[in-house]
Image (tube, rainbow, N blue to C red; front, side, top):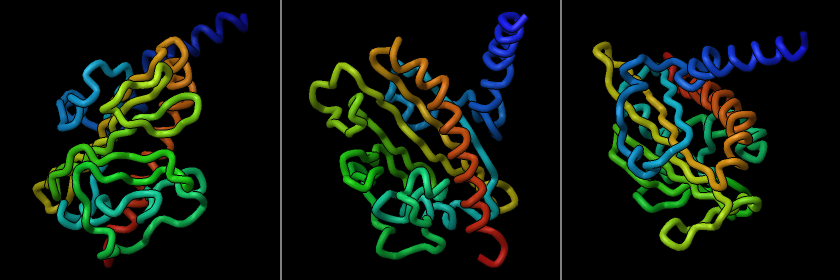
Length: 214
């Protein structure tokens, strides 16, 4: 009986719950689109497309995104988990508004893990790339020989104006891990659920910062 129930639960999660979590808030068209940065992970073994509508035009959303970073404005998610317990910025800071492709945004306090700005089109597209060696979790330079055990992926933010002056924010992730028999179970059990929790929190906090009177 227990085995049958566990099998049914696994099937329900794989066929119904998981696809909906990985496309949270996105339309079928948004989930099916190809976005800038997808080409950086051509053989991805994991992908998500999540979306929300923000109560401001893209030119007001963009300054919040461009100042993200562990050593900058934070990530607007669960700060205890991804920003050393320090609160993310609650205002736009002029000193953090300069960003270019190739820049590194720190992800850990010791500076050994970071996101690299891979694609940047103001008010439209920001794609961050992550290349982590395992088991250390330290970033490596993707232009050199990759470590045997690694996680590689992109975190892309795509802004589109709506007819009523708001912003449709679509967040696309693509990732791959090697060796796959090791990294794939970790991604299914921990990586994907954690991303959903953190991304939905970021959406909420961005809406709060962009709400009426802000």
